[in-house]
Length: 146
Image (cartoon, helix red, strand yellow):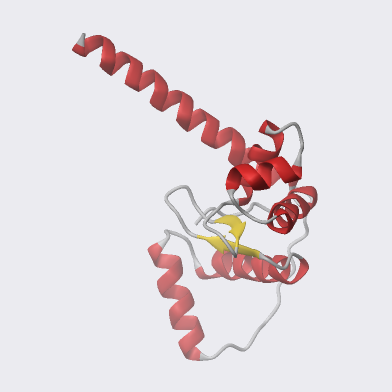
């Protein structure tokens, strides 16, 4: 699970919550499956729940690179939509047409980006690093086969 680190200046406050044992068991199982702990996962899920309320149409997905925000109505991640808008000179209609989705979905992703630009920019940068690394590996492989 890709945990969103708290800002350095964030003050941690201890709170007590009463949760059903089944919820605790499921939380522990999930935390173990992603190599985390109950408290970190619970904080992440609470943060995500607040974001879901604040940004209708956004969901969070698990994947090899971690949990990331995406559009509920499609398989697209927010970072993919934001990068497509940038590649289309900031045009929401052009990005929507290219992606084959409604403009309102692009607007949903852009609204989330406006609230969390650093997070989405980090996803874009990480994906560019992977793409660059894979391209370099492909080129080296191609040279060895020639």
